[in-house]
Structure formats: structure tokens, C-alpha cells
Image (cartoon, rainbow, N blue to C red; front, side, top):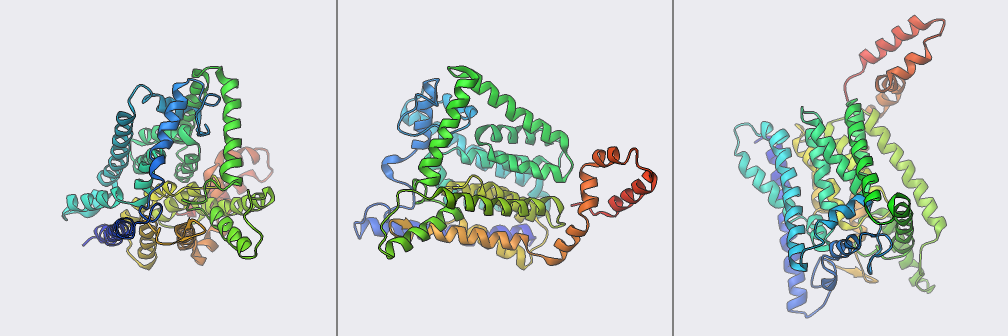
Length: 449
């Protein structure tokens, strides 16, 4: 049995029973104990189902999405509303079917693409179709995807585009992957962190292509809607500020989240109530500033790891996925779909040692529902998921020897990434030839990341 097949089987052994157990538990709580939401479902409020999609389609249909929106705020990037506009003329039911079909086709299609490009050659003579079916079923019933479908959120589309980029980056179809990533960046922005993977391979043309597509789509969308560029840019800023007040400083995102920020806020609120201080209305901006500083430092560590530390590819891809989840501050449960590229890279890795097995177990646990108990109306999943994300991050980053090597090679690696900068600096140096010779020797001794 190949390592890839063994990992897919391990994934199935955790995700499928975890999904079945959650279904049985919530069905029992609803049908036999007559308990309502959230005990009878691991999804969001039934009366608010698909409303991330419906509210955004409504805003897009006004052709002035940032100022003529409905009950929900308009905080998406402008190109997202161009996408939402494609469903503006459909009935509510047809719009739901349209969204579900596109989401499933994109997610499962991107998995099939990765299987065809990367995984299939690793399976050799084994029953690769069975492995593909098992992988697709595990992802189809995973909690982040089900939650994204339930909310009507396009993070499923973004995760699929990022997986396409990772699949094609080292092939002759890299430009296609860069176009997919450019679209993802135009939709929400944060997928730009995946450009670090292109930086590692010095594929600067792909970086320029992805950024160019994202910029053109964003500016075109700003100009397309009523009011023009400036009007819609101001509206976007207002929408993001409202989002910050309601979901980042306020508690609108604390119930179904996987990020450390909301976990810390929840623990703090619980301690306040136990002390008899009562519930607060919002988080202190000072606390947010401190958290932003800490998370920024952690992001620098992850970025350094991606660009400088010699390691297996799955660890580098997973680190980028963790960065995508970390920003912006709050990450609802559907944001865990951003682990999909890292999961596929992990399955494709030739090693099946303790590190790989544990990482796969952590990811699999993050992919199952965990709403088995509620404290102050908040699921314990909001505590468990950040713990597993932090443990996964430690599993990815640990390795004293590789960090020591990376720190020793920082100057040479910088010259490897940006040789033109150093060549220009040494152009008029007295000992130019000897410096450049030493630099070339150091670069030649580097092993490819």
C-alpha cells in the first residue's frame, strides 16, 4: 500500500465516523429529546440558511452594493458582487441550486485535478479510482464544506481556486493556476498569501500574472457599479469598518468560529461572567491591537518558515494555509476549507512518519463537527478547533536542525531570491569580483526548497 493510499484511508476512518456520529447525536437531541437549535443541528440557524449568498445577491442586484444593501452589511471585495450578480435574475430556489452546483463542482473538481496531476502517479498500480472516491466523499461530508454550503458562502470557491493553483504551480499549466489564484484574490484578498509558494520557486511571472488579474478585476468591478471607482471604494471601506465593529470588536462571529481570537474572547467573557461582571458589548480596541501584534509576529514566523526553512512541500503548503486562516482576525468554520490544499499536499507526500500521521489526524479532527456541548450559548468547537489549529502549526514548524540551517543560510537565500539587488549593490565595490564569487558559491551550496 502506498503512503498516499494509507493516508486517505486514515482520513476516511476519522472523517466518516465523525460525520455519522454528529448526525446521530443531533438527530437524537432533536427528535427524541425535543431540543431545538443548536442541539438539533451542527449547522447554522435554519431560518438564516443560505443567507450569505441571498443577501449578497440582493446587494449586487441594486448595482450599488455598498450603499443599497439589505439587512447584511456589504464587505466583500467588488469583484465578488459581479459574481453574485450572475444569480440576480433567478428565483430563490434556482439561486440555491445554482450556488450548490457551482460549489460542489469547483471543490470536488479541484480535488480531482490534484489527484490527476499529483496523486495518481503516486498510487501506481493500486486501485486509484477507489482512493479518489474515498477522498472526494470524505471532503464532501466534511464539516467546513457543509457549513459553507449551509451559509451560502463563497469561501468554498476560494479554497478550490487555491487548490488549483497549488496543483498546477510546478507544471506547464502554471499560468492557469495563477489565473485561478488571481480570481480568488479578487474575491476576498487573503488568498494572496499563496503567492509565497510561487516566491519559493522563483516563479515571479506567476506572481505578476496573479496580481495583475486581481487588480484588473477589482478596478473593473469598482468602475462597473453605480457611482464609479471612488464611490464604490469609499463604500468598500465603510463596509469593512462596519464589519470590524460588528464582527471583530462585536460578538457577531463568536459562535461558529475556528480562530484563536474568538476563542480568547470567549474565555475572557466566560471569566467575566463567573466573576459577576456581566456581559460586555464589545471587545476593547486595545485588546484587538495586542492580538494583531501577536498574530503579525506569528505570521512573520510562518512566512520565514515558508521562504527559508528547508522542509517537505506539504509543510510549506500547510503553513500557507494556516496563514490564510489566521487573516483576517475572525475565521468562521467554513474558513477551515483553506486547509484543503495543505491536506492534499500532505496526502501526496512520500513520507508517512509520525509527523505526517499526526498532522493528518489534526486536520481530520478539524474536518468533523464538534458541537456536542455549549457554554454560554457558544459551542465547545470554538475552543477545540483553535487548539487543534495551534497544535497543527507546532507540528508543521518544529524541527530545530532545519531552523538552524535556515538561519545560517539567510544571506545566501536572499541573494537566491533577489540576485539583481545584490548585483547592483556590488557593481562599484572595490572587491566586487571576490564578493560575487563568494555569493555564487554560497548560492550553489543551497539545496532547493
